[in-house]
Image (cartoon, rainbow, N blue to C red; front, side, top):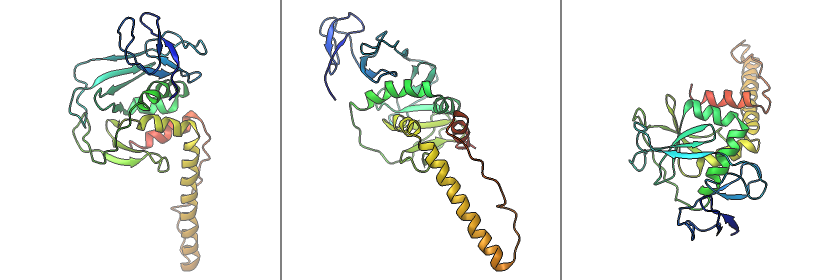
Length: 239
């Protein structure tokens, strides 16, 4: 990551972007990416120093009854990025999003950009080794299912169909980048191809045995690359 000069959001002093503390006022510093131009800025800045865009408001607030991190077993903190509220483990940087929040986040481009700008830059600063294990839902304590998001993303997430999704460090930014790059179109196309192949196989069997079966006589909806299609897909994860 390139080092550049930024202004401390507390005192305005010039500080290099790789510093974790201001040398003038001693406040703690973390970088994030501007959701508009992706330039570096410190958390707490009012405006981006590169393009002048207003910064997305972020806050981490301790609240009761947020539950515990399924990996570290310590209390969650509430993380708010713009309009998106999620639970965060401040030790492992894991994120918990309930069903409604995840659907909302995936279907709204502005919120995706804000979350990616905040988490994406932070998650690139430290790499944690992947931990392959089943973890309990923070709400119901039942072990969650592990699933390759959209079957083709390569990002394995932990899902409780009743309560939400657990993201280990770096997984949520990867999913957002997958959606931003048109990954949902690829997933839908592959799903349609699989259904068509299954229908063709059934037709061959029907011709061979003279059996009429209407089970697969369906029209496959041609969903476009819009927020309604994405939201419908996300909702299907929890059916």
